[in-house]
Length: 381
Ligand SMILES: NC(=O)c1ccc[n+]([C@@H]2O[C@H](COP(=O)([O-])OP(=O)(O)OC[C@H]3O[C@@H](n4cnc5c(N)ncnc54)[C@H](O)[C@@H]3O)[C@@H](O)[C@H]2O)c1
Ligand SMILES: [Fe+2]
Image: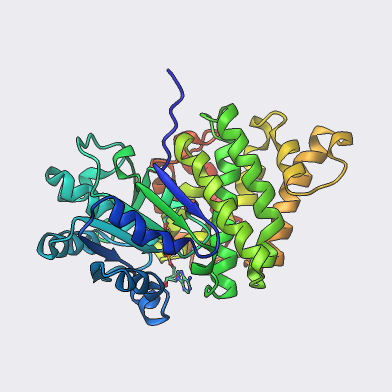
């Protein structure tokens, strides 16, 4: 089968990029924006950086903000009703993965109403039409949802997060402006940045990886390893690097898949509402260790991209260890904890079964079963 690559039609990068939104909306003849953003972003004046641009250009919009972190089926359903009543003809998603993923699901259902129950979108649903035209403006440097064909929704009733993979949800325009990310507090910068690193590393070692996606992932690892500490300190270079690095990771993993660090993070998010990036960061070195025998020479390149010196003179065991240690060190330096106290022994069966059933699990280079998944969860208890 041929390798497939899906990317945005257009993307803008760099400080001040949000000013391009008005022009793009006008060129494309859009009349009214349905702005999806979460309540905190509105409160902290992040959303208004973009709505000010719309107002100054005389462009009409309406805000939808019934969106929680780890967004739910209900957030999507309410948004669909609000969109229908709004008279909007395009969507602007402003936020982290939660706002962008909710916007994607709304845009897909508006264009494909037979999926209005939301649950039927899980996996690779056979939608027929592209979503409502969407401009995505990330405010975290993590998920890269602005350039991925994925979105993740939480099923509160069944205590699970489900991944939807559908090229029809691709935003036509991504506006990746580091100034939109500068208000992130340290902890959020660290965890979302580690999510991006997890995308780059899992995407690089996933079963479907190939030459072009390797190029994206290795570059992303290099940029993220160089930039994350600075971003946590809110330096200009750090923010710029993370904005770009997370996007490049998205160009890769969206097209080839991830692995079980993500499966485990989805499960922890659904059961304990653990922030996605924190869960990814905790699981990444543990999962790298679990996968190491199945990755050939790849950990040498990961170690090199992480900035480890002398990798060409290392034995297989040495460079594998070096890659894992470099990830552990970055995670510790940016303040990610190693243990998740919320996990209870009696939940382990459910957590492990959910992990094995997750859409990202088949992409992991080493197979996973319930017993192995339980052992991996025990390492963060
Ligand atoms: N679509 C994809 O490809 C993809 C990939 C990975 C993860 N995800 C999903 O994305 C979600 C996580 O997204 P996220 O990690 O970006 O965080 P998020 O969108 O859940 O936001 C977390 C919190 O950070 C706040 N915040 C965001 N930007 C801010 C800023 N600039 N300043 C101050 N506060 C800010 C938000 O208001 C919110 O309270 C999860 O549901 C995860 O499963 C999606
Ligand atoms: Fe992620």
